[in-house]
Length: 367
Image 1: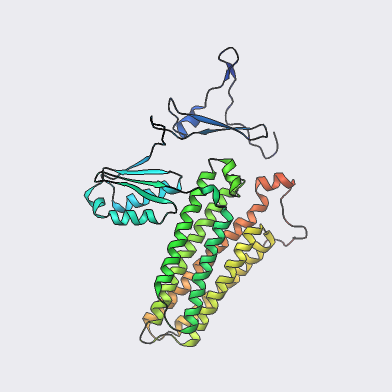
Image 2 (image 1 turned 135 degrees about the vertical axis):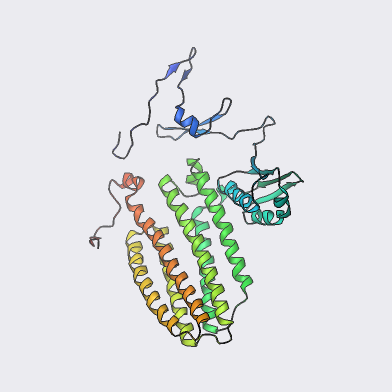
C-alpha cells in the first residue's frame, strides 16, 4: 500500500459459484447508500492499473427507456418545484416529470417553464393537466470545463466593463444588456455544476472534460459557485450604479472616478485569479491573494471617503452598497486563489512528482 493509499473499508472473500464463475458479495453500507435494489444492473470499468470500478447503471423501465425522475407537486410550492427542477438538472437527470400538479403550481407554470429555459439543453416535451415532462438534450462531454469557466469569466469582464463605462460617462445604461449577461452566467453555472457531478460518477468522462481527480472536482465546483455569486454581485452593483446616476442630483465626477478605479482594480484581480487557476501557478495565486488583501483595504477606505462626501442619504446608501459588493467580490476571489494554491499539495499532484509542487526558491515564510 502506498503512502497516499487508504486502507480498505471492508474486505470480502471471493467464492466459487459454479464450474468457473467467481463471485463476491456487495457491502451493505454501499448498497444502502446507492439504493441498490434486486434486479438493478451494475457496470464494471477496467481502469488499466489493476483497479476495477463498480458503478450503478441507469435504471430502466420495462420498455428499455431510462426511468424519469418524478417531482410530486401536489403539496410543493411553485418555488420548491423550480428549485427541485434545477437540482434534477445539476445532478445529471435527463428526464424529469412533474406530477400531481396543484392549482397553485398550475397557475405559476409559466415561471416553472422559465426556470427550465435557464438550463442549457432542457426542453419541455410533454404538457398536460396532470403531467409536465422536461428532457435534457445536451452532450456534456463536448464541453471542456476550462472552456466553460473561461466563458463565465469573460461575461464577468463584460459586466465590469459596462460598470466602468457607465461611471466614466455619467449616463445610466439600459439594464436589459446587463440582465441578459447575468442570465447567461446562471445558465453556464448550471451546466458546469451538472458536468462536475456527472464526472464524479464516471472517471473516463471526468478525464474527457479535463477533470482528472475527484479532488479537482470539489475545487472546480467551488470555483463555479464563486463565479456565479460574483456575477450576482456585479449585476447588483450595475443596478446600483444605474440608480445612482438617475438621481436628481447625481454624484460628482470625482466620486464616479473613485468608484470606477475600484471596479477596474476588481476586474484586474479577477483576470489574475483566473490566470493563476488555469496555470496552476501557486506563486502567482499567492501574489494575487496578497494583492486582493491590499485592494480590499483600499476599497474600504476610498469607499468610506466617497460615502462621507455623498450629497444625500440616498446617495450614501447607493455608494455603500456598491462598495460592499466590490469588497465581497474580492473576498470571493480569495477562495479561488486558495484553491489554486492547494493544488500544490493535493494527493494526485504529490503522487506524480513525489513531493508538493511548490516552486524551487519560494521560501517566503508564512505570516
